Image 1 (cartoon, rainbow, N blue to C red):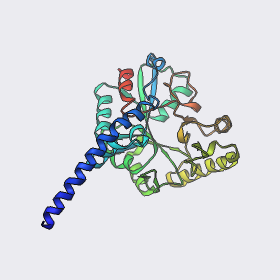
Image 2 (image 1 turned 90 degrees about the vertical axis):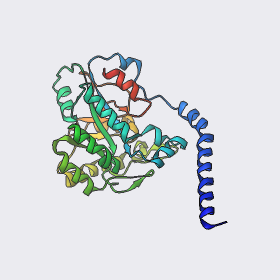
Image 3 (image 1 turned 135 degrees about the vertical axis):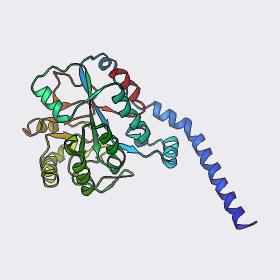
Image 4 (image 1 turned 45 degrees about the vertical axis):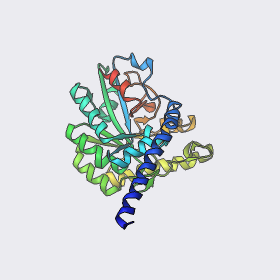
Length: 295
């Protein structure tokens, strides 16, 4: 048997193996995904006629063959809960434009709520957590094309790190994007170096013994942001979506902060407390309900 023949046979066997792996895991993946909480908006929120939906994105992945394969065979929630493929993201932004959905900036939302301005109709705010390189490489050009404002929450001490299989954007990349985006981008802090889990899945900053450490970490995140970006942010974004009453009280007392972004369900209305701003995670599970609410 020639070397070329052996190569083709090996390639064929690998292809068959991958196909069988995809088929054999598909049912189990559907079961696991089916047991996860639904990201669709609640029936209560579905009936709100005047409000602002704050959309939460994480990674916007290029739609290549390997990514599609990983999505099909991996039960890892990272692929299904926090990732959106670039073609889908483009469709979502096109949908907002086609249906004349108003996209407002976070500073606009702050001004509306703090000035007790009635919120009429439906609009959205676009936010990104962590800021890995796919936000800049994939999402940013789409946002720039539509001239949509957005908020990026940065883990200020982890820029450039590899985190859970993705590479966080570097400061040079962030600053280059900032220059291109101009007033379209607003930055928030997402801790300095306290974005990880300990003790059976507890966010490290939520442990009572780490309270003092969190206060220092928060101060550091603001100092780093000012050094790199030029200002301290009025926006703090919870890693993993929420904090303890002790952490929340500390954030409530920070005069600089105007917004604390959570992952609690809800729509922002004229009576909302922006120190506990709800958001909707955007993925294939939630998008149908998002579209339904918007129109």
